[in-house]
Length: 310
Image (tube, rainbow, N blue to C red; front, top):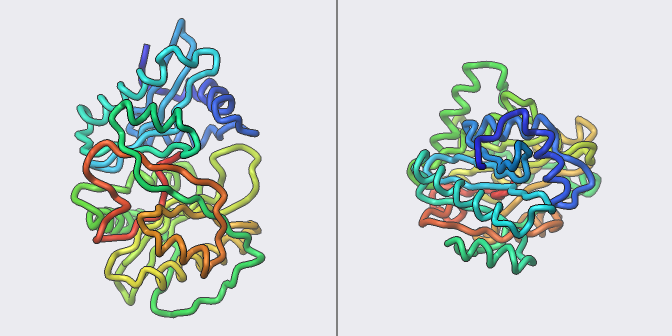
């Protein structure tokens, strides 16, 4: 039986996830609670005899949606549970949320995974690069004063409302009805990090959502730029300089050792810039698959730096 995930399922989901991904540590309860709430309580589990044996997290970005991580207990692999979870996920996203495009990331080295999703109607596209930078190697000075970067006071309802409005406006430049505001949930309500606004004079031209707490237990302290969006009116490279330097200084001030960021190879020039100018190194790669016509990484309206992976 497939049903909506609830907080009472979290321990079972944590155990399955650790087994599926051969992780050293489990996911945090706080992170899973945030995913459940951000999905409008639409994430799902597969249950047999009152035992949770599989799960899938749904992520709602307006007319665009994505899912993952998805996991099935190893004892039940090959029984069709994963396929059933995905079929139910697609049904929810299309029928309940009118998603025009559904996406995911998976491991490019897994021919099984790629073929599995292709058989369900997804098309494999370009790579997403997960990048990391050790802070003791980073130059914290800014090459330009063109853009200022300010931390948002999310405890202020006025500032938070303004942030949501600005993020919604930027997201709509990617394509119509694209909405990234659900990503604010884990910062505002679960306390997983902080948010920066990029300004050109008095105008908002970018936003960076950063995790300062890991989604897994007992992992190394690092600041993850979970999502950054930059208006096409900005000089992308100078804007990235400002965001990376601000995040690096913030991380250094709280005693963290590294910063992380994700960049899709649709923006190959930006990937190369992060590697050559800021000396990031690739530590993981994902292949993106889409079902539908809208690709948020191939937009003329704004640059999006993130990954479709939880």
